[in-house]
Image 1 (cartoon, one colour):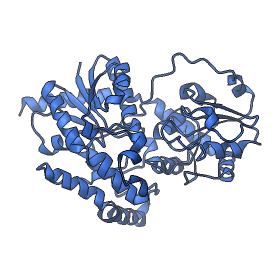
Image 2 (cartoon, helix red, strand yellow; image 1 turned 180 degrees about the vertical axis):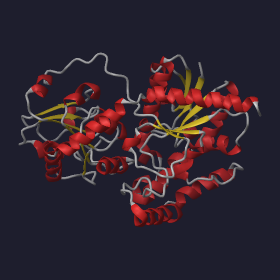
Image 3 (cartoon, one colour; image 1 turned 135 degrees about the horizontal axis):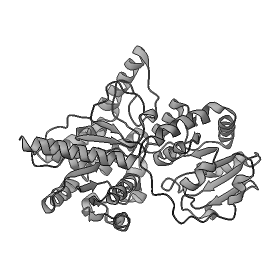
Image 4 (cartoon, helix red, strand yellow; image 1 turned 90 degrees about the vertical axis):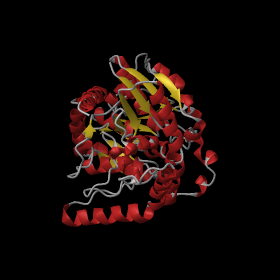
Amino acid sequence: MPEILIASCPPVGHIGPLLNVARGLVGRGDRVTVLTSARHADAIRAAGARPLPLPVGADFDDTALDAELPGRAETSGIARVNFDVKHVFVRPLPYQAAALSDALAGSTFDVILADAFFLGILPILLKNRPDRPPVLAYVTSPLLLTSRDTAPGGTGILPGTGRLGRLRNRALNVLAQRILLRPAHQSLIAMLDALGLPEPPAFVLDSGILADRVIVPTIPEFEYPRSDLPGHVCFVGAVTPAPASDFTPPAWWHRLDQGRPVVHVTQGTVDNADLSRLIEPTIAALADENVTLVVSTGGRPVDQIRTPLPANTVATEFVPHDMLLPRVDVMVTNGGYGAVQRALMAGVPLVVAGNTEDKPEVAARVEWFGAGVNLRSGTPSPTSIHRAVREVLSQHAYRRTAAELQQAYARRDGVAAIADVIDAVIAEWQVVSRHA
């Protein structure tokens, strides 16, 4: 079976999905090594893989970026995007590249599966050494690849359609890449130049396209159509955590079967430091509604919820989505990509309120495909949440769309599809090597 090296940036949103992939690959007999932050070593071993720590220069604590990166807290909007690309993704590049070089010198890997923002893979790709293994880039967010059919990735702006829409898309992409995000791209050019490497033939946020395959862990039915999509981009379906194996229903579980609509609200497990952004306004919004509201704090103590819990509300730190979502009628979320896809896999329509990281892009896709309501805010009012939940509950089109997406997800097995891509690219590489 293949020897696989997975390389990932330290943030949980990047390494978490790749650990689910690692677990599946190990399950079929592959030997997997994971290069990422040392603090994920236990989780890597739990997945059956071998941990390989990144050096200090490439490691950081993503839960304390403002403390680790002086000046970050004073930025926002486009300035924050430029700052983060430069300091979170470009600055670690040489250290990541050195760690990759050491790993390849110490073992023979059949393939590298790299987080698409693990820019330390670029020296390998740009040098295009004939003895390198094939490289697969794994996209950990909605596909942000520049296209004539879409607005700039990361903005949350819906695509323009038709001739005028394409002209608008092109103008916005030029504005984003040549002006607004020029500092981010220039930081990558400067770093590669310092390493004696040429300018990349792709914009910094599109650099994953330089890999031999691009793995997109969703279904094409939940991604903007692109008439110029490169042929080596592979939609594999969602990659999900292992099913809950030791779940004991809490005392309130029977309340989900009382005939009232069930609403679930979550801020995920990362962007949940301030529960007043979404959880507390949702509790206030639905306090007098004939629904059962299930609140998940994503690991935060329940007593951090400052709003008193009404009679129709239960709260818990964590509940497995594979257990809960089949009983849910609407999920209110800040737009985590994994959580939104889990809801759609269960046929659950959404109310989405997110304005950090890739969340505006996730919310925009929910809106574009008609699977829910995009509140276009990370701090919505109780009134707007109430209105959106009532709309989703009353208009059957949302549930019908979610059910159609559920069927599309069911037709794909994400990890099995990734394994097929790995096997295909290794076989292809072996043929090329024999004829080189």
